[in-house]
Length: 146
Image 1: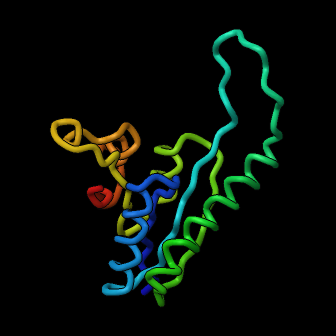
Image 2: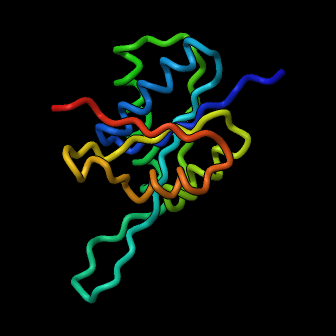
Image 3: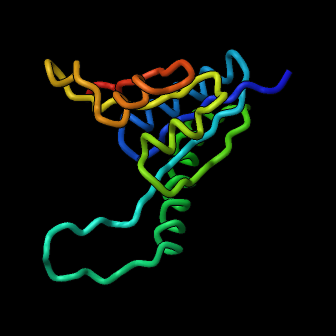
């Protein structure tokens, strides 16, 4: 039997950090490989404005890889998990990237926006899209209250 896959959306937000912690604890208890996924896309300029200096796709990907590495290292420095963690940087929209990566996964774990009150009952667009369209179980994790 192959090792179960637990895909986690990681974007640096408090919700995604909480989701990564949750996924690592789950994998420690029940087994599996954790796959941290960070999606990136080139900027989309829709309004006429002075053009900022263009950054190459290679540079954007390098920055995304560095960001994902730093986030995973920061979270694992506190938890020191014994599970296998893989990092995937994917070009494209976050929801689509997560759904693609979660194909045949046991779980897809995403963070919520973490607002309190009524707004807290609402999911962000990425988490809502994942809950609606994933082919596996989706866990939405709220960040700790401030």
